[in-house]
Image (cartoon, rainbow, N blue to C red; front, side):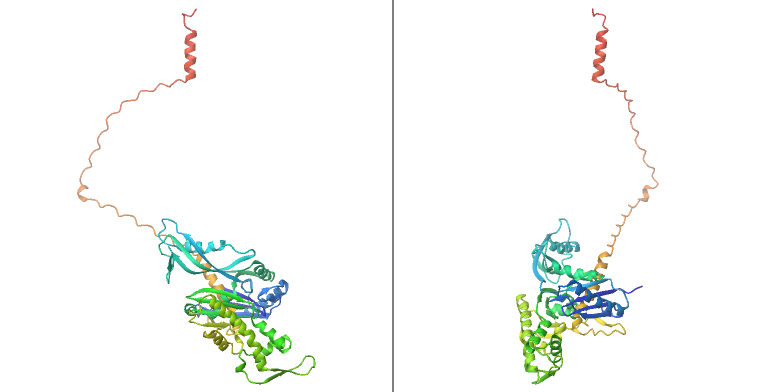
Length: 460
């Protein structure tokens, strides 16, 4: 029997990554990565597909690399989505429980969630995710209790609803289909990254996930085990690289190398030295002061972290983040960013690696699953397996009710077995009924009367 696989496709601003995973039979609840492909992203700006043809070519290359490594065909994919067009809103929904129903059932929960698809939205916007946050039965909030099985006449819930522009969603689907693939699901990228780098304990304690990618910084805030707030910030690693290019007057590739090899967001933590690198086309070598480089990086990083902290304050969760801030994505590899974030926000910070729920990679594979750049891709694979489990659960037939036991027969008194049954009383003879004469119709009566009248001898 072929093993079940799930494919995650991370369409980012700087890279497109495809990861293929399968369940690890030896480590229940974990997956194993059996194939991956990563190429430079073309046609994507700040997380949004701008050129469908160029983006499709990049997708085809990444998927082909992953399929070749996994030695299996790829048909269905779970795709990540991000970009400045992503918005979120709160809504409270309410339904009435049918009269005569003993308690709230799972079908009532599904009906309440489904009705959120009917909320008014701006033109050209559609719903991506609907997340229930808290439930109420007859205006009483349920804490640490599932509404299923609770008696009541009115069920309500607060929802966190994620939306996106229909055009942006359509462009992603078009690229994937042009690459010969089927979109199995579209997932908000910080939700996928959270699945990869966070545990249920983190979500229960309260944590802010910050995924610093190439074109966007994605924020997802969890408290009491559920998602509370999401936001996409249109500044990230590529903006830092562009600042270095302008501030140090170097080429984009050189700016990226300077950021990765010598960059830091805390100038006071870097040595007072100068870095030299070759000039362009035989020109004299160029020199960059490392502290000047760090100051350039610090300015943009500070802006990004300020945006993150503003989202925490607006969501009113700054006092609930026992788990602190978790940084992931390629931007989390920037030197000193953990200390800088903790200093700016006053909240404990750490790096989240996407190997929390991954047992490893298949033999002979080279992907480093601890690299934060793969957080979204691995999270998409995990999301896919959860989605499959949910589908299989819904397809299970409901158990047939057990037949009611037949009532025991009434005991027979042995004393009456020898008694002869009493004879039934004879019925009195019935008088034979007289045959009824057929009634003449009114027309026949008139004909007989006229006949007798014409045959009367007294008529002259």
